[in-house]
Each structure stands twice: as C-alpha cells, then as structure tokens.
Amino acid sequence: MHPVLRALLAILLLALALSLNSPSTQRMATKLIKRSLPPSIARFLPKQPFQAPFLAHKPSLSPQPIYTRTFNTSYPTMASPTSAATLFEAVKYRHSVYTLTDETPIPNERIEEIVQDTLLNVPSAFNSQTTRLVLVLAEEHKKLWELVREVYRQQLPAEKFEQANKRFGGFQGAYGTVLFYEDTSVVREFQEKFKTYQDRFPGWSEQTNGMHQYVIWTAFELEGLGANLQHYNPLIDTRLATEFGVPETWDLKAQLVFGKPTGEHPEAKPKNEISKTLKVFGK
Ligand SMILES: Cc1cc2nc3c(=O)[nH]c(=O)nc-3n(C[C@H](O)[C@H](O)[C@H](O)COP(=O)(O)O)c2cc1C
Image (spheres, rainbow, N blue to C red):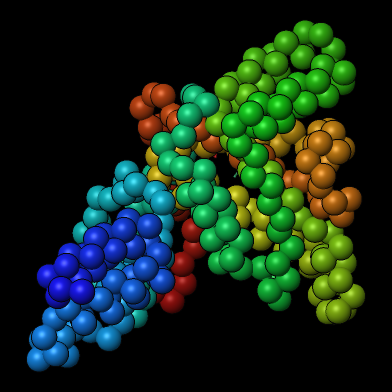
C-alpha cells in the first residue's frame, strides 16, 4: 500500500481507537503509523500504543466533576497523588439534598463505577469486607419506593401514613437508590476467626457500612447528583429482599436516594463550637 494511504488509514484507525478507547485498535494504529514513517523518524516514537492523555489513566464516562475549585494550602502534598485540601473541598460540598428529579447528569455506567470503586477502596476491620450494595436505577427505583409505600400503608395509621407518603413521593421522584447492607454471615465468620475481638465485629461492621455510605454520597454530589440518606429498615427489609433477590444474611442498614438536584446546592448546617467537640494535647 502507498505510504500516504497507509498513514491516512492509520490516523483513521487511531481516531476510532481513541474514541472507543480500544487497546487492540490502538496497537494496530500505532504499528501502521510507525510503518508508514521513515525508520529514522519512527525510532523516536514511544514503544507503547498511542493513547489519548485523558484516557491513559482509568477510563471514566463522567463529564468533568462540577466542583473543581482548587484550595489554597501552604502545605503541598509530597507523597500522595492528591491533597487533603482537595479532600476537604469534597467533604464540605456534600450535603443532604432532597429536591431531586428522576434524571441523572452522569451515565449509569459512571454511577456504577463510583459504587464499584467504593467497594474496592473503603476499609473494613481485618479487611473483612462485610458491606454489600444494591444499586437500583430508574424504573426499578420507582418500583422500590412503591414497595416501601405499600409496606408503610399496611403498618401505619392513616394520618401518620399520609405524612410519610409525601416523603415517599419525593424519594420516588428521584433517579436511583443505593441500598447498603452488611453480610452477617461474614461478620460471624470473623467473630469465630478472631475470638479476642468477637464483641467488636458487629460495631466495626456498622462503621465500615457508614464509610461506604459517606464515600458514595460525597462522590455522587461531586459529579452533579444530589443525594439524601434514609432509614426505612427494618420494616421494608423482607419486601425488598423478595423483590431484589437479596440473600437472607444481608442486613439492610441505609438507603441513599439520589437524582438531579433542582434548587441551589444547600448551605452547611450550624455546627457545635469546636471547643465542645475537640480536645488537643501536646501542642
Ligand atoms: C447516620 C446518619 C443517619 C441519617 N439518617 C437520616 C434519615 O433517616 N433521614 C434523613 O432525611 N436524613 C438523615 N441523615 C442526614 C442528616 O440529617 C444530615 O446529614 C445532617 O443533618 C447534616 O446535614 P447535611 O447532610 O446537609 O450536611 C442521616 C445522617 C447520618 C450521618
């Protein structure tokens, strides 16, 4: 094939590979580009297949996070890839958001990626990994909150149900819910394995579950979703378990409702004086 044609084909392939982020097409295009160039030039090209710099890291389907403001700090981080300042920007941004629509500003794949990355990175006691998550989206989310409504209709007196029902309408009008569970069989397994800490594992299990809740909540809000945390367990446990095929050993802890926020992002609520909540020694 004529070298110019070969180069054109290679560029086309590379554009396709980068748009699909396909490693095999990237390899093929890289080979073709190198072959179509004189060897004296080709030898200066990198050995690895060409990649778009923004894809060279982990592929992410999300748009740019909405919250990218940088934070001034006089303590630059040396060892870690990010700074506590960035972390605290995120921490300060997360709030309970209740006015949600049934849309999402990010694709389902990105939502799932956040949930997966949380499971893969949040710590647990003795690395017991007791947390289990169920991600419920779109129509399934609406069905979930219909089930909650039905359970409460059967359990509450009429006037109390009416109040609760308004709240259920709000949750049902959102886009999705993450159900947070703890696998009690794993908790028991670790209680058996580490008898000295037998009494501690149930508490540690709650703690790791809370950490998962917090990371997903914060990550969702950084990517433009609003979210709020609910606790309709244990009343709804059996009904949800039947509907979503949840194993018997999974114990429901919380429900994180999320969707596209409509109003202004909420302000921070008043907090206690630090002097009441912190003691420092040895300063
Ligand atoms: C452990 C825990 C349980 C919570 N339970 C609920 C709940 O059942 N319903 C609810 O609407 N908010 C719940 N929240 C949200 C808190 O009310 C809220 O985080 C707090 O008032 C601070 O407001 P912010 O989230 O906007 O910062 C809970 C939060 C935590 C950490």
